[in-house]
Length: 212
Image 1 (tube, helix red, strand yellow):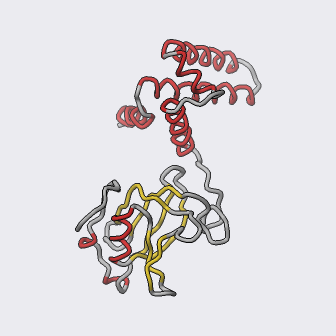
Image 2 (cartoon, helix red, strand yellow; image 1 turned 90 degrees about the horizontal axis):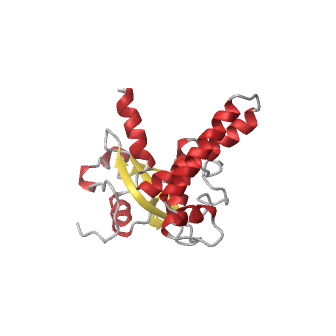
Image 3 (spheres, helix red, strand yellow; image 1 turned 120 degrees about the vertical axis):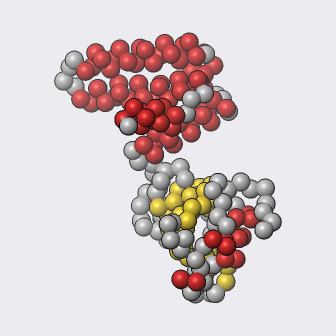
């Protein structure tokens, strides 16, 4: 099948999916690739999946209109695909995408009335992305950009200073200050990772290997 130059990781071959089980349709769960939030559920037939792969924009089959529709074709709030996976039975899709705005027709971030904000580890990855952007595209007035301009020695020194401050706060009973210093240390560590060209996931992989 002819594909466009848009890169979709783990591309799905429609021929490997079981469309027949669902009467020609497969459910497609859409997840924000940055925050991990589930955004919506739609249905794809073979033609919808093929168009999604060709354009890089999530396209569904409307059961009410009996026609293909590309999410955001009217509002502009398109879903740009980063990855598509099939489940073990090959009859359900997980579509990881980046939304250009609110996903629900009500104006909510998601169709499940959740704020589409990163949580937990997803927030660290989001922050890593912001730091990477500040490194690649320095912004005037950005503290992060100023750190990169000062060089890796100064960044490493800052990490050391924040670590010492965290140790000092650990000896006291002010939990709010301790959390603040811990947050400062985590942030500057992410800046140091970026300066070294080492992704957070590489560090986590090392931890996982040690855990084994």
